[in-house]
Length: 445
Ligand code: DOR
Ligand code: ZN
Picture: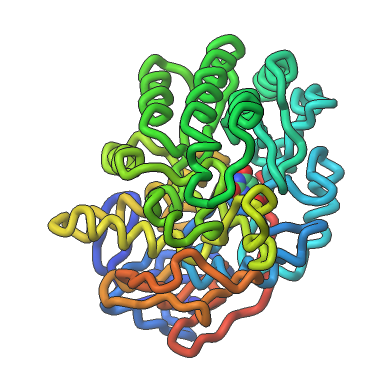
């Protein structure tokens, strides 16, 4: 028998063909059929998942590294069982061209525990760049339809959006969209002014913003045939609209974040700026509809929208407090906790397979990351050893993001990540609290 580097034994393997107890053999950073092992890792009592993929993080390089950097962000990721992230372009300067992506990649090289890919920003001044974008440089182009503190590059008017959608369709580029209608917010602000209390924030950035923008996105997709992934849905109406459009044959999909599944406006009353994000956290009925999208398979990906800001920034007066919260560390356990609370009688094997679909298989497929997202022979040996039971309280001490705070502090999580493995190397071991080496790679299509 051939010698292999590592054998992960006795876990419940979550594979594309179902969940079964077995071993995973690793050699040369890949999953291989089996053999004598140099090292053995016991996964009894745990699930072995394909390394989780978070297709929506803001790791803040370049220019905003006082909020977050790849050392901290990637540690938060592996503690949360995430082995690949896709990074957003609203940096300083913004990542709006292939050259900017290459420059960013050079800065990250040697600092990340996880593998990574990039979303380039759609430049309203140069929409034509998307028509011949190299798919090896960016997995998609991000469009901010509304701006705020950390998102100044906005594709604002209909004519600009039309050019971006046309160019992306010509280049075969998927758009990922922050779909909120800035004109709706501007109109409301002129009438109402700005909120004085965080608890009022939702009324100032209400559901009409994203609903109007999603309707516009669907018109543009219909006109140009552009593949569009709408990010961080916050309302029931958006879920209905995108699902209906997909049913009608349009190439549209959507993401839901861990935050929108975990918090409602009742939490914002308690947590203030911590749960302030764009789009806003909404009512219980919206959250219920987003969970329904999870149960029914309408959602394609779950993302963290990991968007750290310092506590000092979050404590500013309401109009100056930037939206966003860290979440790559909390994403999988928070979603798992929600799943078990909402459907306690469901078989854990069924629930975990669903988690893997949204947090590994589908993000890899949608963004074309070969060798990722599936536990099978020949795939990258990225593995998340996940204990489904127990109760684990999250405290500020546990937070790995550079900002040092979490909106989930005080939450009791069901389950925890025991071990995270990237390319066959242990990058996080919860029992000893130790990390591996920052040898994460750029995953280029
Ligand atoms: O809440 C948000 N924060 N929404 C965004 O669109 C961007 C993000 C950030 O970068 O802070
Ligand atoms: Zn985001």
